[in-house]
Length: 326
Image (cartoon, rainbow, N blue to C red):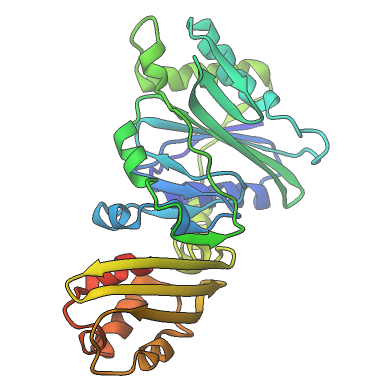
């Protein structure tokens, strides 16, 4: 087994690194990484339904789709992520217990009463500090999880604060739970760096043949290429969302504008606009201009401006329309 600490805090890089390892490494791998503020969505989720897009844009937060299912999570430098990338069959590792055990053992030894609760959550006194996800892909098993150590819980809540009735779809929905930081429950103060060493030490004791590994220049270049072609693209992170409908009622100076969108594979296939606004042009012209576009904020903004959206609606701001359509 190889033990890797990622040299990067870029979320697309670290999620891409997991796929690169699965595809190219013959050995089992244990990897730790920390991301700068970012949102990681599950493979089967509707990205727009999971994030607070206005907050994400304002704070320039990367949004990345991962290979595993499950719900969306917010990462920041106070959150430690661990991955086991193993040459094991799907039937061997159905339970999450095996690869969450080292984390629980370390915390229990520190005097923290942490447990595996339900299928895949680690909790302390009923509050979640770690969510875990798993998949069998490329002939290997990937199980990874988060550890909220000293994260900004307020940012987590803001990033994932969505309007639940805006989207209608069959995508997997995140289940919000009470969350907590590990640091709040430690009998004695401990730095994240020291906590990382304890986790590494526990895993190394369980796998005596383990050895440290650093990504080579070739590894790093290949991961960056995977970031460029997949994990930093709108097509993967947003366009891979399942089919969904969006409906929203915007109240503005122009009046009430009702928007209904049907989106498939990230493309607007149908849009209907109603309301009590006063228009000097047929709304059907704008509907036709928007149909067939990627449901992508900048693409829709460009089309609205090109069509002189105020001539359809009157006194409404572009940002108001965009917020209603995403």
